[in-house]
Image (cartoon, rainbow, N blue to C red; front, side, top):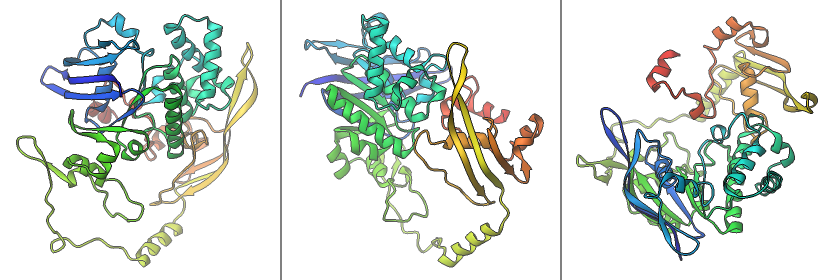
Length: 438
């Protein structure tokens, strides 16, 4: 089978005033035509930097490709080293021959342009077609990626779509010029499980239909098992193991790979402590990774056990407490504006009559597919979006009736972890400074 992409001895590093870090260290791999290569490893292992190196999107400074080659096979059988060509030539490959779906759909789309216009722009950048032809192609793509009401999505802004819908728009953009290679950098990480499954199914279908190759980057071994043909396992910028999916899953050789597989939660076993990779491997003084030899600790540490009666007593105690948060008949409706003057003819009922309580010490799970109103419910409770109607009572206080200063003071007692960490942290502040500012 023909090789589409051949990476040899690739090294990418980032420099600061005090140190140099090799994010990708002497990496070599091959992507074969029509097949999917999965790149797996924990956060910080070099997966994303590898994909950005292939696209020549490493920010310089502070990063740069130090050495190695990235040979891309042309349609006439010749090869081009993407490392050595100039930036103008590289732009003819990006989006056209090699497309990329980035990790966060929330920050990948331009918030001030309509979704349809963004796809039209990408098509016209690489193909000599009229705006009407590009618009027709965009609508076809939206249908192909199974977006509901594609005509509405054409005129919608990114913030008006759910996370799963935004990711489908990103896939449509990546597919707009029929690329030979699609690089997907954790495209399902920020999505809920039901949407994740449909996105994976969609990408498999698109790959077969367009006969393209894929590089699929993830930390989720379950996803790799579903979508990949071949796998490379990365740790600290290096490839520690490579092979077919069957070989990696059935007969892993490297301690790190064994650790990753052992960390997968099992449905038939109840865990009291979630295992980590470090439970199965350790590094020697010279940087070698070896399997950890486990010692029996049963004689030194008593196993924590809870009887069914203890669990029942704790649940009963929670149920006797007064609610900390009480939501009653919460509604959040967004007007749909149309026409030249932006008149509102319809509404989107994002949340429609939701009620629940949360008691002290209780964890309430809010589950549903993309676009069902989970995030809007959470944001409405904190009044990050204004509710249309309903009551929200937190610790005895009516949240909807509070003024700005009272609400600011109350928000110290209820916090939110946002869906997208990339757009939630100020890129101009160090992590320490951002936390100290709060």
